[in-house]
Length: 410
Image 1 (cartoon, rainbow, N blue to C red):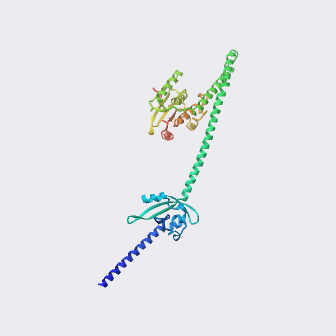
Image 2: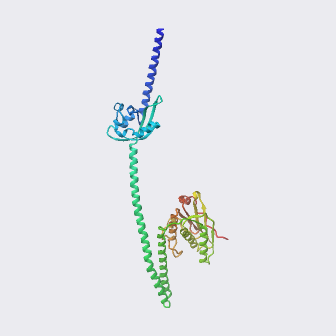
């Protein structure tokens, strides 16, 4: 009986020793796995006393396990390395906490770590804390540099914007002064040349009368240019009034007025119903007058002239409007010049104008959040497109080229 009890006790002891060896082997294997991690993995008691310190912690902070185990984060790496009271309270309430802390390494280097803390339990009660630390020092430094660079960039942008606004204001003032100061001498030249023409009408031969007419025509052109400059400068300061506008109705009215001014011309004008626009009715009327006026002008040498206005809704609530004609057209290689002030693609002797109209169209459309562009084939007409409140205008222009020029009604 005694021998049997002795054997049973020895078997139980061997089993315990085997289980203990297995546990120790598992622990050593788990410790080896944890040592492979780049992060600093630390286990400490609820009071902060460190119980486990992996090789990642040694590499990150510079302290050997023998220097760390038995001490607290605060004692080892300064007060910024320990959990603040609010973080400790959150950890005990929710079982987890994540935040950034500041540590002093073994060589005196400052480290910013992101610590993930997990509260472990034993027997249903809090036991120890697993803390996984990731070095974010370089990331924090980079973030600070980005913030600093953004601040510097914003300051430069503000300064550059202020300089541009001042420069634009100076240019507007110059345009106002130039146009205003030119009005008086131009009116004087026109008035005196008119009196001269009347006073010398009996003595002027055909050549001198031609010269005098050329002088007066130049004065009228200069007067028109100064008025156009003033109008263009005014666009930057004009307060927009947003209204619901029927551009087709405006186009119809402009077409009737053009016919009344030149009743001898036979132009097929087609105006399709279009979606209503939102914008300033006075400025958008200027857009329509310039585009339809140009179409009327550039079809003046075209037999069977035809002009068309229409529009189509696009995704996102935008609309693309167009004015199309079968007139003189232009070389598309120079289309980029169309919307600059005083840029002309036709000789003044062929088609009169100030070269300001399309610049005003671009400015007005831009102030309404849209874009304007044109397509053409020389001798086959042109098509001018514009959108309002539409950021996708360049894509629309690229994906949907101008259709064929309109044909006159039979």
